[in-house]
Length: 603
Ligand code: ME8
Image (cartoon, rainbow, N blue to C red; front, side, top):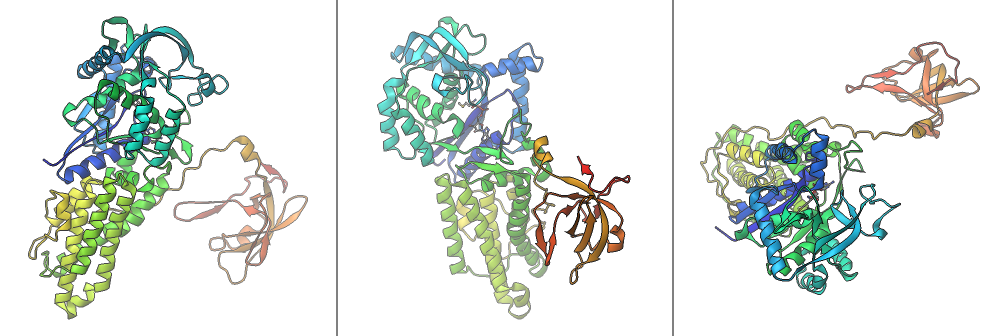
């Protein structure tokens, strides 16, 4: 086994099922885990659930469970089943209600207590159950948590405190000495300025709580859920320290301040890197249950395929930045990139070999110039993956498929196969070896597609290093070529709802068509004179290929009367006719079904 690589995701709360935000982190972590396995490393990939939160108790109640543990078990199955659908290859799945985790938490608590890192004190403060954290007066907006919009609970109780303040300088020193510790840089800067403002000791137990891990020897105290949850990462002790804790920016402070301080206090090594990616929005809005815009990742995986969704996650949002999810863009990436670039290259090479070389890799030599270009791209992709620059890595993989397409185009084997067999063979020999390299490179991103392509190549993927070798030898029989991706009709962006006030801004009116004529030189454009009751107007409508002028005269149509005029083919259109258009492009003009006075308002 090569060097060890230990990667984690946050352990998620179980008050709801996973949405695409959770799926995003988990899929990206999975891609890295698979990538490092392909490099022959000894990988451990940990994910799981954070079950000891008050949210669990509340959600259990809301779902009619009297026992929070029964609810947790029920939810855990749902999460695990989603990860199965998304082909997540975790090595262990931790649930914080498991005894093995509770033992670890108690052991760390005791260790810190023995080392003098904990003390008892009275806590007076404001606690937000949504955040599972204390808030300061200054953080509140109108007396409420700015994130959860609920007033925090006033708490005064005797608790255990952790001496976080003691680690202020040590943390700053560590961050300074290890530039990779917190990434991206903007997050590092955020944490540095937060620590520089001064750290206070934190209360790490709750008095009288009913749910959560009991404090050893203190039956009326339970451990604060964040102190408990972070310790999950110590589960595979042989793999500690973690190489990457993958999180989003919402939980940065817990991971970059409290967690490393806990580890320092315990005398343990710190994780090598905490990488906080951005937040995903849906059509520009925060993902939230109350907005009703949570998207179920399973729905997308079933509609488009798990691999398309996985590819989209890695490709669409520049890793580390915030980004928007839209199904429309997913379709675009599937059509324009996976089908048109990657799928197209692979398929044309394999079908060519099938049709002209009897399904066998032709006799050819390595085209040194071409192959060195391929190898240097693979080196670059590997380097980008090492730097956690996953979006750029995917773009380079796509670029490699483009290079393949250009190579194929340049050598035009469909011509040379008749005139210069040798040249055609040379092109296909090199091209099919690039297909094989791509097969290896895409496997961590799209495991099923990688497998399917490996079948078509009649090849077994075993390591990343293979991608650099043109090891598909002349005579090797390939399997049956089949397109890897099928294109979809792009879905239109879902319209976000508008308010009544917004709707009222439209001045919709019934208008009688007085006359109509075709605008000369066009087939689509009709010029209409309309009667709006107290005025007449001219407007241009693009319906001329399905309506003749005579069809429209005398009709009571519906128009947008307060649209800014626009000049179309030299005619000023003062208003817009409303018409429906179906998927096949069939147009139907909206008319009023009874005679009403021209100019009547439509509302
Ligand atoms: O915070 N965009 O759990 P959680 C991107 N239990 N990522 C998102 C996202 C979005 N819109 N929404 C959620 C907790 N995530 C604690 C963690 S760890 C010791 C304890 C992802 O269920 C992202 O990874 O609220 C974020 O950090 C995490 O889910 C928060 O999950």
